[in-house]
Image 1: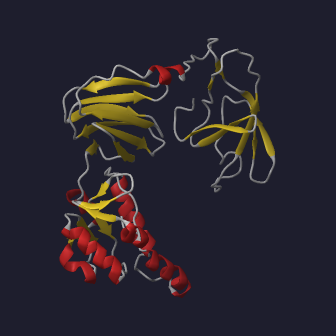
Image 2: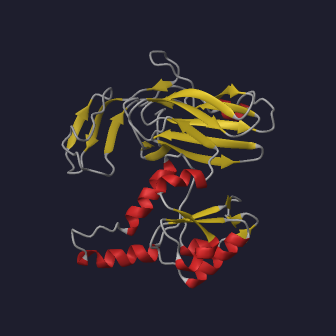
Length: 320
């Protein structure tokens, strides 16, 4: 997804001269609308701008990134300004087998080298994705490719639970990763993989397609040693802090019981977007070097500190 930084800057400078009756979208609105369509197709994509285009090497099929991935498609939002040197590099990209998609109208410098997409929702027919989800939902995709294996990370960006059918166009054996237990469960042994699953609100699911066809028996011994299983209510090296407090943006502190973390709107900060600091205290008297710190009341991204040192980060559930 091409980000026209020059047009963004120019629009910001002239925003005070626009009237309320101006019907044309801002350039960042086009970028956001196209990105939203790609996100919930779902399609694995990234943003690219002039400096990146000029620095990337051309390989068969497109641009070669530093991590070894090949960018095979570049999408241009409407009304974007492209410098001559960038247009020249994009022409080389097209000749190497890469595709350029122009949304709504051709860019004058790349008219003969690009495909016209007249409607944003028509991108589905032009941009291939190895994962399809039905019914349509707010589930986004991120993939990572290794030796014989592809990892699919699917995130339900909605707070609502949803039941969907997933089709993954791959071969070999498909596993679902249990992020809480650090284990793998076989989903299917024959691709393309089609199955039903349920996403909780804001839940991340991870699937691994192994093209080698050799069953993965489990984690390595070293990885297993680092995993501490804890069932609430049992004395199994687990810690669930209580008597929490939260520091609000105005520096006031409110006590929490740790079982129910209220949303920020109920605390009087419905429009606030930023970090808040939660604090709790506990004693750890076990002779075991590792423990599971459980915070079931958390809902989203957190950075956890123990005795002032960062102990870990978690982006989505489970919060263990």
